[in-house]
Length: 298
Image (cartoon, rainbow, N blue to C red; front, side, top):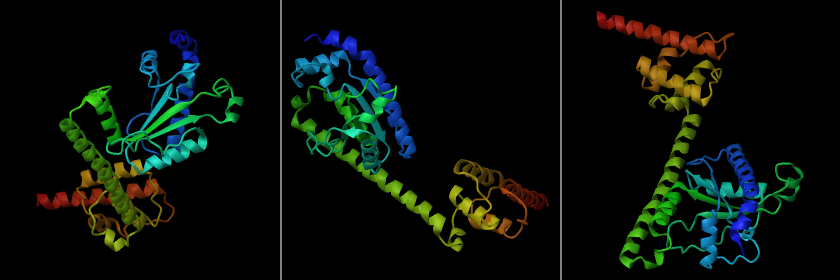
């Protein structure tokens, strides 16, 4: 079997498949608000890697190198463990799943065994479109990892690729300790994310009297502005954060209660929009700043 000849014949077609597949995966992640640690990575398996796999007898190629499930590979590295199941759900909805992702060949005493591998192909109806008409039977392997699993996989691969069985037990113990620490990192990051979301939900739903005791930040600032504008204030998250930071910096207002005391019941809301309301708030804060400056001069 001449792998070189076949590889040269299929490479362009498989590059096109990789690019199209990666593009769709990226769109699916964005559509479902799934945050990634890095850009989605895609690669076509090199001829050297295929030759090594074939000659080492780690995979038996019967007729064609297209039998390899990982000829096309996509890697998704997530910030938080909670999104792994979501990625599996959305990808297996959009594509046809060819393997059981719950089964793993990885030993459970090693970090990374929870990394998910999906073998996917496009659904039959996709071949009716020009972008996919040549890709009906092609497969792609999708690796889904957390950032900690990614660190472990890349580091261990670099250090011990093809040599792991020769590592002394003492070094292996150190490896397991490091892997355990990385698992803790995943857990801690997820717990931290849960706490942050719980806090923001509290800021959104807590009685306003409780909000008055909080430090000023973008979320408590939004509550003050909504409360005192009778719901008129409607800046998006980015603009709200910029305005909140500007007010903290320019007017040295660090507590919710201070801002509320300055603007509560001071603005006539009839017939004004968000921009006008914000301008009137700034005018109040500017007047207070000037007054304080005058008092200090005296």
